[in-house]
Length: 134
Image (cartoon, rainbow, N blue to C red; front, top):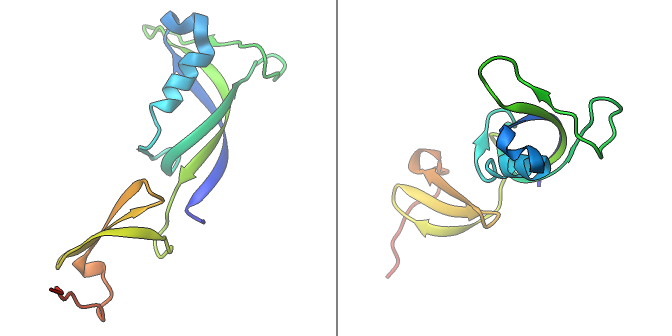
């Protein structure tokens, strides 16, 4: 499963001051809002995450020391160590999926039971010919 990869990331998550009482929950909500969407910064689709809020002072993972941004933006940045599960397929990579629909112009499939895939006629191997069976 080359398309699935586990990555470690040092992130800064920006939290609104109204969530200051529950920073851990606010960080979880921010990261969860990215689930199942493609993110350029991760170069893939985020499928899952696990994180710990890091203290700047001694790099312990129990207390939280956040830094308030200067200027008009009231958000504060929280340093986070995260482990991310990413779906990041590359060109010429072989993926397995279940074919859901065959058509003259395309093949539609589901990969990993989650991702909808469409293979257009231009990308289908030339020796494959579409025939409708009765």
